[in-house]
Amino acid sequence: MRTYWRRAVAVSAALGLLTAAGPAAAYPPGVAILAKNRSCLSCHVSNGPWLDEARTIVEVLDAGTKQSLRTSEGRFVIEVPRGRTRTVLTVIGRKEGDGLPPRRNAWLYVDPVQIESSSLSKFAPGWDVNLPMSCRIVGDKLEGYDGSYLTVLPMTVRPTDAAREAELELQIMLTAGEAVKGKGKEGLIANYFVRTVLLKVLEQ
Image 1 (tube, rainbow, N blue to C red):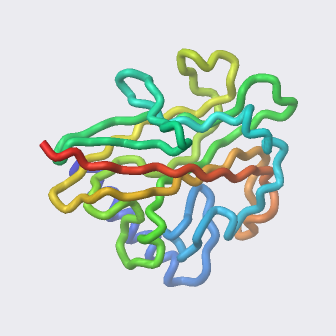
Image 2 (image 1 turned 90 degrees about the vertical axis):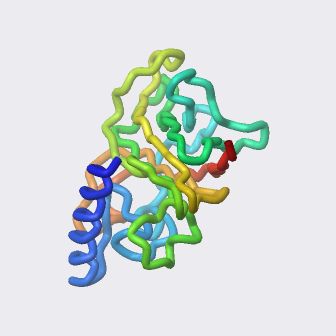
Image 3 (image 1 turned 90 degrees about the horizontal axis):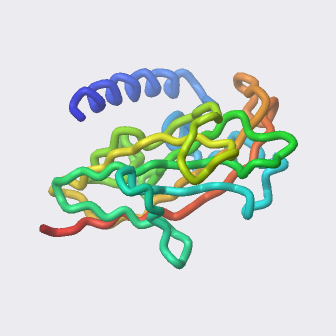
């Protein structure tokens, strides 16, 4: 965990230099990092063919049991005892049958309250996290999703002594094509989705 944070500080410092040089648009995810952008749609358009949510896969699974953390209300709840870690899988993609499947999936977990803050992390305050965002080429495999166009990556979180319950947005873009540097609304075909993720601390 310490190694990750040293790397994160170095990357954040580099991004700070880019921001100081002038306005920036980013892909992979740059919400609230290179600028105070509220969502991916600040730089990109949702113009793709993957609007059918019945065929769209957005899941947060427990990494050990592979059980969904989705509640009956449609949000995801990640419960973790204070000071302990929990690893979840972010699963994003489309069911088989698309004429044009997505090529890359981009996502990030962001605390909307942190977007305007000066904090280097836009995740929930008091929570350690090792992979709150990614941009990944489709092609991962997961039992139960045979034939689907997927990306699957683990994320480990740990509530510190300062952690409190928090509500995150899981912002997602399914994409094909190639981004044009400095012109975020050109090149990519994309669809944008948002899910709510609740972080809950369990007191031991």
